[in-house]
Amino acid sequence: MATKKAAESTLYHLSPRGFWKKFREVAAVNSEISTGLPLPAVNRFPPPASRPEKYSTPATKASDPAQNPYWKRDVRRAYPQLSIVTQSELSSLLIEHSRGPAVAAPTEEKKDVPADAPKPVDLSVAIQGITQNKKVYSVTSLPPTLPTSRPRWVPHLAEAAPHHPDSYFPMMLYK
Image 1 (tube, one colour):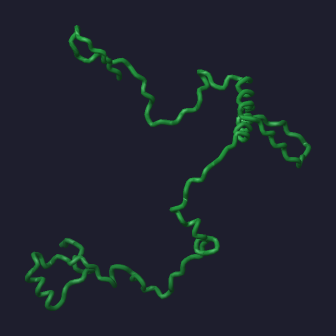
Image 2 (cartoon, rainbow, N blue to C red):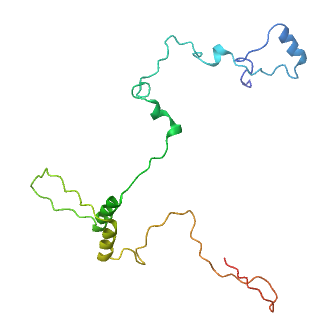
């Protein structure tokens, strides 16, 4: 004959003893229900804090006071740093960018001489030189715009609002 198998509700839970057991039998609505408090010795094995060895914090760069100064940890003072671009730097960047990518043919000679730094040029002269060579922006080559999450609104004339045909009504509706 098959028997119905079910988990024992009080097997792994604390149950009152003595006076409180009698009190629970009298006062509880259903005294057969488990208390829900697990037995500490059975619930978690091994029990917490029962291991003989002591925990040691692993040595990291952050645990060394010489490598972890306060000013690096202080997030309250993590202000954004200013970036300054002078006119001469901007003009050299504009000139380099307008030339386009140019790669020299490979040669067998090895040169250890670094490339000469570009001479500083006035920004107005750099802009004038770039715009004389080619048209910077056209219908096909527009300047960059900020990315937006929705398309730009283009006004479209909607049908007129209801009003008397002979009255002065200067309002126009747009979608």
